[in-house]
Length: 158
Ligand SMILES: [Zn+2]
Ligand SMILES: [Zn+2]
Image (tube, rainbow, N blue to C red):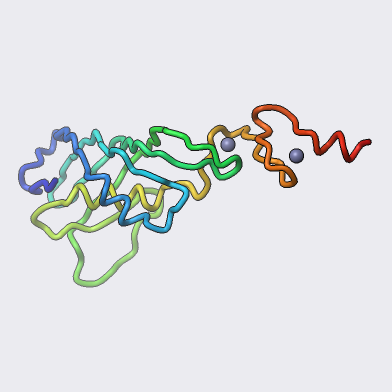
Protein backbone atom coordinates (compact mmCIF):
# COMPACT_ATOMS: atom_id res chain seq x y z
CA UNK A 1 0.00 0.00 0.00
CA UNK A 2 1.34 3.40 -0.97
CA UNK A 3 0.37 6.65 0.69
CA UNK A 4 0.77 9.98 -1.04
CA UNK A 5 2.62 12.34 1.26
CA UNK A 6 0.40 15.32 0.44
CA UNK A 7 -2.68 13.31 1.45
CA UNK A 8 -1.46 13.00 5.06
CA UNK A 9 -2.97 15.76 7.21
CA UNK A 10 -0.91 17.27 10.06
CA UNK A 11 -3.56 15.96 12.46
CA UNK A 12 -2.70 12.44 11.34
CA UNK A 13 -4.37 9.72 9.44
CA UNK A 14 -4.84 6.13 10.48
CA UNK A 15 -4.07 3.43 7.99
CA UNK A 16 -4.68 -0.27 8.12
CA UNK A 17 -2.29 -2.24 5.97
CA UNK A 18 -2.55 -5.87 4.97
CA UNK A 19 0.80 -7.05 3.69
CA UNK A 20 1.30 -10.05 1.44
CA UNK A 21 3.06 -12.54 3.77
CA UNK A 22 4.98 -13.78 0.72
CA UNK A 23 7.03 -10.58 0.91
CA UNK A 24 8.19 -11.58 4.38
CA UNK A 25 8.95 -15.13 3.23
CA UNK A 26 11.17 -13.78 0.46
CA UNK A 27 12.85 -11.27 2.74
CA UNK A 28 13.46 -13.79 5.52
CA UNK A 29 14.18 -16.74 3.23
CA UNK A 30 17.14 -17.75 5.41
CA UNK A 31 14.90 -18.26 8.44
CA UNK A 32 14.37 -21.97 8.04
CA UNK A 33 12.93 -22.16 11.57
CA UNK A 34 9.93 -20.15 10.35
CA UNK A 35 7.92 -22.63 8.32
CA UNK A 36 5.23 -20.23 7.24
CA UNK A 37 4.31 -16.57 7.30
CA UNK A 38 0.53 -16.81 7.41
CA UNK A 39 -0.51 -13.17 7.62
CA UNK A 40 0.84 -9.71 8.24
CA UNK A 41 -1.19 -6.66 9.09
CA UNK A 42 -0.48 -3.29 10.61
CA UNK A 43 -2.47 -0.54 12.26
CA UNK A 44 -0.54 2.63 11.75
CA UNK A 45 -0.92 6.35 12.14
CA UNK A 46 0.83 8.69 9.76
CA UNK A 47 1.40 12.32 10.70
CA UNK A 48 3.02 14.97 8.58
CA UNK A 49 4.76 18.19 9.42
CA UNK A 50 5.81 19.76 6.17
CA UNK A 51 7.80 17.03 4.45
CA UNK A 52 8.56 15.08 7.61
CA UNK A 53 6.33 12.07 8.06
CA UNK A 54 6.05 10.14 11.30
CA UNK A 55 4.66 6.64 11.03
CA UNK A 56 3.89 4.66 14.16
CA UNK A 57 1.78 1.77 15.23
CA UNK A 58 1.76 -1.97 15.63
CA UNK A 59 2.51 -4.76 13.21
CA UNK A 60 1.13 -8.25 13.80
CA UNK A 61 2.64 -11.22 11.99
CA UNK A 62 1.09 -14.69 12.14
CA UNK A 63 3.75 -17.35 11.84
CA UNK A 64 4.24 -21.07 12.13
CA UNK A 65 7.72 -21.75 13.46
CA UNK A 66 9.77 -24.54 15.00
CA UNK A 67 10.90 -23.82 18.55
CA UNK A 68 14.68 -23.41 18.54
CA UNK A 69 15.05 -25.55 21.66
CA UNK A 70 12.48 -28.35 21.41
CA UNK A 71 11.66 -28.23 17.66
CA UNK A 72 7.94 -28.27 18.44
CA UNK A 73 5.85 -26.50 15.76
CA UNK A 74 4.19 -23.38 17.17
CA UNK A 75 1.59 -21.05 15.73
CA UNK A 76 1.96 -17.55 17.09
CA UNK A 77 1.25 -13.91 16.42
CA UNK A 78 4.41 -11.84 16.75
CA UNK A 79 3.92 -8.15 17.44
CA UNK A 80 6.31 -5.37 16.53
CA UNK A 81 6.09 -1.69 17.41
CA UNK A 82 6.98 0.69 14.64
CA UNK A 83 7.98 4.30 15.19
CA UNK A 84 9.66 5.80 12.23
CA UNK A 85 10.50 9.30 11.09
CA UNK A 86 10.70 9.66 7.34
CA UNK A 87 12.49 12.63 5.85
CA UNK A 88 12.89 13.75 2.28
CA UNK A 89 15.98 12.07 0.89
CA UNK A 90 18.81 14.61 1.25
CA UNK A 91 21.26 15.33 -1.53
CA UNK A 92 24.04 14.63 0.96
CA UNK A 93 23.77 12.26 3.92
CA UNK A 94 23.77 14.08 7.23
CA UNK A 95 23.63 13.07 10.88
CA UNK A 96 20.61 11.04 11.94
CA UNK A 97 18.97 10.86 15.34
CA UNK A 98 19.64 7.51 16.85
CA UNK A 99 16.81 7.28 19.37
CA UNK A 100 14.15 6.90 16.71
CA UNK A 101 14.33 4.95 13.48
CA UNK A 102 14.88 7.37 10.67
CA UNK A 103 14.33 6.71 7.01
CA UNK A 104 13.81 8.58 3.82
CA UNK A 105 11.01 9.05 1.36
CA UNK A 106 11.14 10.14 -2.23
CA UNK A 107 9.06 13.28 -1.69
CA UNK A 108 5.94 11.87 -3.32
CA UNK A 109 4.74 8.76 -1.58
CA UNK A 110 5.55 6.22 1.09
CA UNK A 111 5.53 2.53 0.39
CA UNK A 112 4.06 1.18 3.62
CA UNK A 113 4.44 -2.47 2.63
CA UNK A 114 8.16 -2.00 2.22
CA UNK A 115 8.43 -0.03 5.43
CA UNK A 116 6.67 -2.83 7.31
CA UNK A 117 8.64 -5.66 5.71
CA UNK A 118 11.94 -3.85 6.39
CA UNK A 119 10.98 -3.27 10.01
CA UNK A 120 9.87 -6.85 10.64
CA UNK A 121 13.04 -8.20 8.99
CA UNK A 122 15.18 -6.07 11.32
CA UNK A 123 13.15 -6.63 14.47
CA UNK A 124 12.57 -10.37 14.11
CA UNK A 125 14.20 -12.11 17.11
CA UNK A 126 17.06 -14.43 16.13
CA UNK A 127 15.66 -17.18 18.30
CA UNK A 128 11.98 -18.06 18.52
CA UNK A 129 10.86 -20.27 21.40
CA UNK A 130 7.58 -22.04 22.17
CA UNK A 131 7.89 -20.55 25.65
CA UNK A 132 10.68 -18.51 27.29
CA UNK A 133 11.06 -21.34 29.81
CA UNK A 134 11.19 -24.13 27.19
CA UNK A 135 13.37 -26.92 28.57
CA UNK A 136 14.43 -28.29 25.19
CA UNK A 137 15.40 -31.82 24.25
CA UNK A 138 17.65 -34.38 25.88
CA UNK A 139 20.81 -34.48 23.80
CA UNK A 140 21.17 -38.20 24.43
CA UNK A 141 17.72 -39.66 23.80
CA UNK A 142 15.89 -36.76 22.18
CA UNK A 143 13.07 -36.75 24.74
CA UNK A 144 11.19 -33.47 25.12
CA UNK A 145 11.90 -32.20 28.65
CA UNK A 146 8.71 -30.09 28.55
CA UNK A 147 6.81 -33.38 28.77
CA UNK A 148 8.81 -34.61 31.76
CA UNK A 149 12.25 -36.04 32.57
CA UNK A 150 13.75 -38.82 30.47
CA UNK A 151 15.45 -42.01 31.62
CA UNK A 152 19.02 -40.96 30.73
CA UNK A 153 19.54 -39.29 34.12
CA UNK A 154 18.45 -42.50 35.90
CA UNK A 155 20.96 -44.57 33.97
CA UNK A 156 23.78 -42.14 34.73
CA UNK A 157 22.90 -42.22 38.41
CA UNK A 158 22.58 -45.98 38.53
ZN1 LIG B 1 10.22 -25.33 22.87
ZN1 LIG C 1 17.41 -38.55 27.64
